[in-house]
Length: 109
Image (cartoon, rainbow, N blue to C red):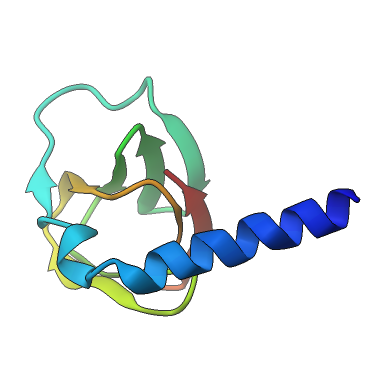
């Protein structure tokens, strides 16, 4: 019963993601000027940390980094080079794959 419910939810989320245009996922990266230490840390490497806040993914990097954000279905939401510092990307509710250099993780917004 529980597996069936999980499948129904996964199918419903996939159908919703397919029906939404990519322009509704992200407006673009912006520099964060506030303290991000209170946000949930998802993954980190020596120079990069990925954090999640409601409606946003935040990437804190010591140097400029290449980042790619994908939907769970593999659609590219963002592919950019971010400057050093804290940057955030607004995202719609859902599950995403974030790849920053060699660091890859799954996030839920």
